[in-house]
Image 1 (spheres, helix red, strand yellow):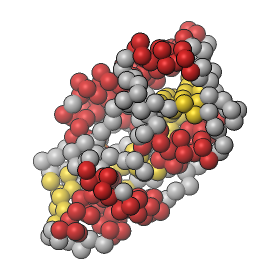
Image 2 (tube, helix red, strand yellow):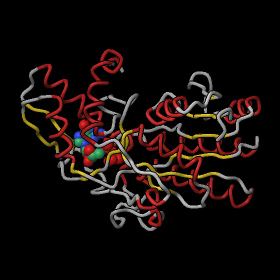
Image 3 (cartoon, rainbow, N blue to C red):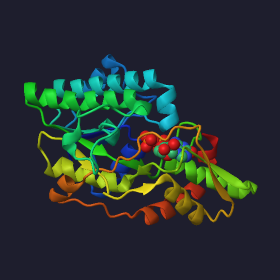
Length: 314
Ligand code: GDP
């Protein structure tokens, strides 16, 4: 990408989009085009069209999505499938119609089959049954990948798709019902420490394993791939290391300095047992993650404390 290229980051207020914007600004890109949700409803085909037609966009990072943790995904599958499909159709189709030079679509590792061979290679896509707790979201993301692929085939566009593992970082969602596990636990341990609660409740058995990538690492990988990858296949983005939810809870407990007990609520779903991805393709393309989980957790807790007022209001 040229430094004066017009770059649209869809979803620039979110965890992923805001990290991409920070990284682009640090690298000196100065024509970033962004719209808040209130300024542009990405589920509105006409409005999205007017926006693309007037802005002359060269590159698109499609980081806008309706996202949520295991409970939100299980409770609101209709909203997850509908909103994500609409955003994808509108942004991808208008990118094509207005001659965007390259688009990067953000998928998720939940697109892989529940029982995929670990670590999960990109070739596992559509090899088996999906995890039921986030099937609707996964199907929308798979459709996004296939839209990019289809537009490339039929129209000769250059749209690439990346599959990040579980993410965390600035502008994460700390809401107790809709959040993902990492921010949820930061908030739970913080609240319990402050109120002197004797125990913290962690959902599920604590046995599922997850991999966590800091959003700044993800953003760096996305911009790297925008510049260095034009292939037809999807690319995993992760660290290639996993830990159990129990281990994650223990690490967060230690960083926050909470001294009570951890209890598990097995009435809540575990979700997929494991989803560690194979990142050899990304490594072979020349990119590796640099933020360790401990560094990322320390940083996240510092930022959580700094933004406490805003976070607790949400
Ligand atoms: P997933 O990776 O798509 O399953 O999404 P989550 O990040 O929401 O959940 C990951 C795992 O953490 C699941 O096994 C959850 O049951 C577990 N977990 C434990 N405590 C919590 C919590 O407070 N919130 C969330 N969202 N998940 C939790």
